[in-house]
Length: 215
Ligand code: CO
Image (cartoon, rainbow, N blue to C red; front, side):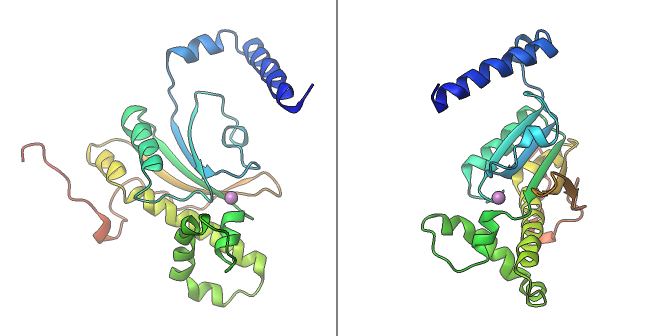
């Protein structure tokens, strides 16, 4: 059996065991997906979204990219966000980074990697914003971990600054945005305690005015 055949074989086993444990599971999923959560995470193969929070297919809407970055011109991420918020009506958006993130590590260095450096620029901007904090830390690992955490917080803010999320709040939709970080070393998630569920805490300049249907 070659490697790809092994994957198909695994798939057959997986589908069989799901159906055994949850009879009618796939039939039900065909009808609809009804996830309560949108996950925005890193593409890193060591951070599989559903598995680490113990959720089954249908329970988590997922967007992943290198270093879990939310950029306001990224149509891909914004489209996922719009669909999750407006159509699926998720109640929680979780930005989940992870310690030891290769993208963050690379952003913290000056090495040249080609095209991806334009993507990692977003993380360099986070570093630049908090440079004073980094000046006090000599240990490389600690510097990377701090930037991993600050990057999550920054992306939580970026999610909140979108018109998609602010329009949802204006409509009175329940929507919480959370920042988490996962440790590859022990498999545990830490809540960074930066949850936001309204515009009040946002810097004034990013707040959109509430639109009125009569104008
Ligand atoms: Co990563």
